[in-house]
Length: 282
Image 1 (cartoon, rainbow, N blue to C red):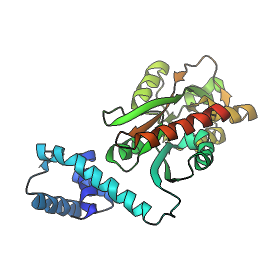
Image 2 (image 1 turned 180 degrees about the vertical axis):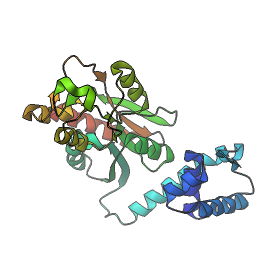
Image 3 (image 1 turned 60 degrees about the vertical axis):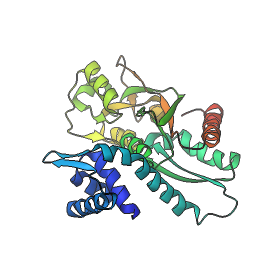
Image 4 (image 1 turned 30 degrees about the vertical axis):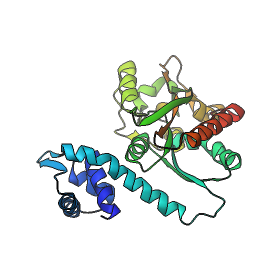
């Protein structure tokens, strides 16, 4: 069985529809349907129940999830590892939320290569939704995000505390007329909406990392951003803190797959913490 069929199966299971899977694997819905049919034929069992609303895993499909993830992950490791120089004896795929690469993770990436010289890394930046999904599906081994998905097969530890503060690129007294929603996760988004009781007027949701802060400053708009990340723009006067606005706890977490080598996970966590201790999370 080719690895593409496994990837397509996992995409369909994650999205709950063949059309959603088609978008993830860059194929047509008819191609996804054919791949799943061929996979079911080879396995001799039905993996999905399908109807007009989408697809749901059968009991056999649920059991196939783990081996499919392992196969995809083994392939990704193999594809990466075969071309590595001999000095690299271990490897990891690592992802971080956009804003975190603008601060602590960029410092960490330089440090970890010195502290763990036999470690080869594949790194990526992304939105919290994609990083959590890729970790669950085995495409990533470890991530650092502000809104983790807690699961039995995923380990998680808090790395540092931060807070979301309301800032404005224009008149802070007029922030309600210029408020833009920035995507910090569903639960936090609901809490912010309930506390400030303001409907965004811009018809816009931002998830652009540090570019969100630059956009607010340039267009004189207001929104919630991590305090440490926007401090330079506050110091420069390009953004202004909105006084008396609610603030929200915004800790960052390191999350990793529990099938990752425990010794390697511990070494990487220690390296992350050493970076934060020496340079701070901002």
